[in-house]
Image (cartoon, rainbow, N blue to C red):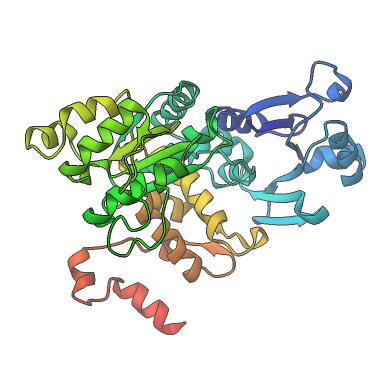
Amino acid sequence: MTELLIQKETFSIANSLKDIFENRLHNVCVLSEGDENNAEIPTKMDTYICSKEFSEQKGGDQEIVNIAKKFRVNNLIIVEENASCFAINTLLGGNLYKVKLPGNPTQACSDSSTNFGLQMLANLIKSDNQMVSGSKTSIHLLKLAARVAQADITVFINGPTGTGKEVLSQFIHLKSGRSKGPFVPINCAAIPENMLEAILFGHEKGSFTGASTANKGIFRAADGGTLLLDEISEMPMSLQAKLLRALQEKSVTPLGSQQNIPVDVRVIATTNRDMNAEIEQGNFREDLFYRLNVFPLATKDLCARTDDIIPIATALLIKHSPDVTKIPYISPEAIEKLIDHSWPGNVRELENVIQRALVLQSDNIINHEDIIVDLDPEKIQLGENILNPNDQLRLAAE
């Protein structure tokens, strides 16, 4: 879990930042001046955040570095509020961020989920098990998943395509007692039916044509860790009984072998289908479903959790920008356009739009016209131009 120190003096967004970080399950300590010598404050923290004004009052960046050394922090963030423009600069080998945030700090605190600056600060914090959340729905899901992670039980995640089921699965793994073990995902729909059994359970040399060497399979590859069975509803009926047996007996039998090999694996299964309907139609075994559905979780469409849009968009900007110092600012008009879109493709569509905007933006600002959303897929397939006339003229001019 990431440990954060926030210096509250002359820092109007300190409490808003604290709320965001705590909703992402970080440990947060808010410092007042003079607390540096408080024995109750942990002496090993990950990140220290303060305002530029506080840094200047203390005598400059070196004094802030000295304060941070007392807590053995890895990263420093110094924030200039109400700046003339947005900018991120790095010093000390990338361990010190100096961030300029434009706009009224009071307005930023009023709606933190749609405030670009607050969300950018939150996403600058590096954490292996961080999930981006801004809506009450996602915050609740995150907290529930963290509790489930501590219980070594099978989890079944249902939700529309592109809503972060694999990301949630990895979060559960990293929050669990198996975090030091492997996380092995497999897409059950992407592997030919005649190969799936060998890939899952392994095979011996010569067990089938082309098996020139033995392979232990992904169940054994995930031993001591977590196995993600993505799109489990696409698994052939002929293989479902063997999977049920492996889950019940906690062992696998490789193709071409008579030996049962014990495995210690936590299984997480995901689907985007209505499993009750799949069972009724004879496409999925009811006994296997109940074996997998020990603790059900559900992800929602992005349009049902609009407070997640800007937090996710800023995380995607960081992901796809070549350098943190080159991350562009998203204008209020562009933010409004992102929030107003219905996002039928969910996070995957949002990622496409952000990558598109990074190409189209100029002067390090993503404006309203740089947000080009996906239109009718049939038009795309027919080769028609998906840009509106204004976008076409602008690109032609460039």
